[in-house]
Image 1 (spheres, helix red, strand yellow):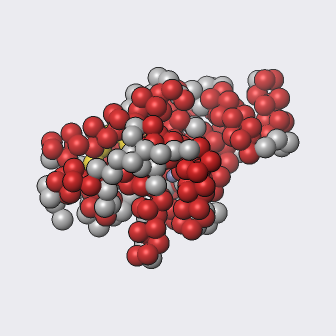
Image 2 (spheres, rainbow, N blue to C red; image 1 turned 135 degrees about the vertical axis):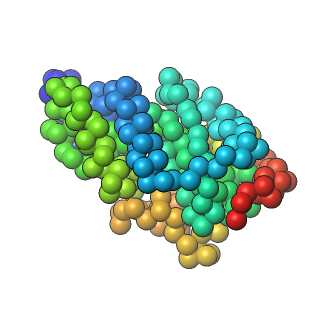
Length: 266
Ligand code: ZN
């Protein structure tokens, strides 16, 4: 283990949540390189194909989702430059979910597109997903799941296939995208920030959670871990961030979303 890393780890124990997040991001960047993240993302994509995940081929829907992603990535790139963002639409109208893999592959289920009432809600969720990559949550999650020593040994690159093995194990359990409570709340904050910066009402993410809470429906990205924040806590924190940061963007994009929903197979 490199000395700078040990120092950074030691600092983790005694500072505020925001400082801790920044320190963890530095540690994560040291442990898992951009190239290893890309390999992890590739590995997950191969697993998805093996599991016969059905990707939606409709070019109109793909173009639409791509357009939303492109509205957000310039702001995400400011926080973490160099990510090669890609997006995929999964044809599964019954699943209300979205996730992102290290390296920048974004996956959104048609069930989420159909459940949202406004484009602002979709944008809020997408912004939340981008944040997991920006804030290097997978590397931080790897450390939490496997222990610092294991990940550090992997980071030293003695055996390049370690990354693939580690990924396969985590993909199988679905835990590669299972972030802790603090990370989810952090991603919500970024999601609101990016949505607002792109001109969309940052309340979209909160109203989406409100809808899920009203339906008593918990998408997988909310239920992976028992430490997950409740929808109520997330809604409160997002609304507080909107006030604290003075986010005032208003775009809802309701008509555009309705037009695309008509083209999604149910
Ligand atoms: Zn998340």
